[in-house]
Length: 23
Image (cartoon, rainbow, N blue to C red; front, side):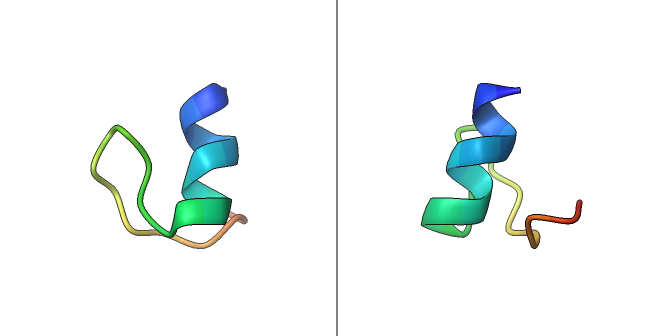
């Protein structure tokens, strides 16, 4: 769930996925 939060902030999380906050 942390990677999702970072994803919406950084644009791409530690998972390496550049997706919007909705995804």
